[in-house]
Amino acid sequence: MEWFAAPEYWWGRLVFQRLVAAVYLLGFLAAARQFRALLGEHGMLPVPRFLARTSRRQAPSLFRFHYSDRAFAGTAWSGALLAAALLAGAGELVPLWAAMLGWGLLWLLYLSIVNVGQTWYAFGWESLLLEAGLLAAFLGNGEVAPAAPVLWLLRWLLFRVEFGAGMIKIRGDRCWRELTCLRYHHETQPMPGPLSWFFHHLPAPLHKVETAANHVVQLVVPVGLFLPQPVAGVCAVLIVVTQLWLVLSGNFAWLNWLTIALACTVLPLSGGTSAAGPPWYVGVVLAFTLLVLVLSYRPARNLFSHRQVMNRSFDRLHLVNAYGAFGAVNRLRLEVVVQGTADRRVTGRSVWQEYGFHGKPGDPHRMPRQFAPYHLRLDWLMWFAGISPAYARPWFRPFVHRLLAGDRDTLRLLRHNPFPDAPPEYVRALLYRYRFTDWRTLRTTGAWWERTLVREYLPPVRLSDFRPVVRGDPR
Image 1 (tube, helix red, strand yellow):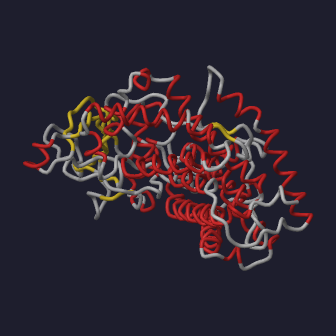
Image 2 (tube, one colour):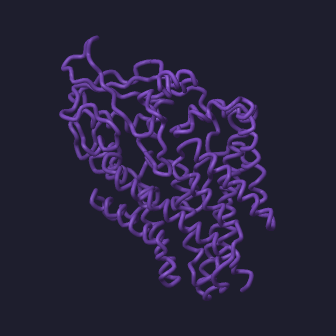
Image 3 (cartoon, helix red, strand yellow):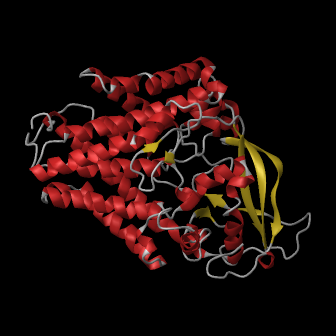
């Protein structure tokens, strides 16, 4: 069974599993802290309502057996505790079968959340965490050497992440082919970070170098992952460097860190045992490998299809998925600014005060913050709301309703509530165009952004404009 064991990747497995456990921990913590306002029984998109209109086959989840906010919280906190234990090395202290069950349970708990998460969980990195997390289970623990078939499946996953992103770009917005997309991207990306302003102001020739390097790393380098060492290892290092560049230039939740974790499994650093493991383990790994290969047909075909889709799960268990990002790049940044007033009647003299979000741009003088790999789900969806009201139609009015009602769970998602003593009488939303300031403006005024009013996004509404909350279904 020498062909089955790959002891030279012992350290790569260790780093990969610890990084995946860390991301799981963040994912479960975000779920525990944010779900009541987003998905709870009285949330914007309540899970019970979603379960009532979908079938078990459409969205398999443990919550099919029973849902309550307490059950959701228990699931999220249990997942966080288990992820923390695996991050601390518990998987190395228990028998092989127990470690595999632990990873499998993490996958099941997070799958149960993702499959009822609706638009709040409709991100490619959710599927990536589930797919990578399940592969972590079959890599084994310190009792056995890393399983070579699973290491190849991890390279196949990394290839799909990178090559899929490259293909969606080269087929999509022509600015990718003209090497000009990064003139806009750093300013218009969903959630800029503290260095995004500086990346935006790089000279135009450097933006072209950035874009060209991105094409090489996403379209050429992934092929090298399947070549012998040291070529495969060099390709993995190039991917890691590119991902760290993305970490510095923006906030993309845990997408970059999971990609780095996958790349680490390509780096040969030996250590530990060279044992292939017991026969049952070999059999389970081979059966799982065959299943993944069969399920890979549609994602593989998608990579080369002229109708390529990105961030699509081809099965409800998120076992093998399609990935990609930014096939089109916005030229303008449009932000929805939410305001409230305590005036009982709206007039031209009404004083409107702005709600502050943690990550999305608001106050022009506030420097963009670093939140990734933590995921601010409401802030991300607010970016989509600025692109088109259609993206926000299911949840934006329920969000406004909760502001008018002074809902504590919703207000906890915000950085600043301008009405700490009593809810506002009216709430409205305005659409602004945001631009990064230039060097001179930043030095003289301290403003990172300048903004221009585009139009009214939502006219002033008050609590009586909404029907009463019935079983968590405000509209």
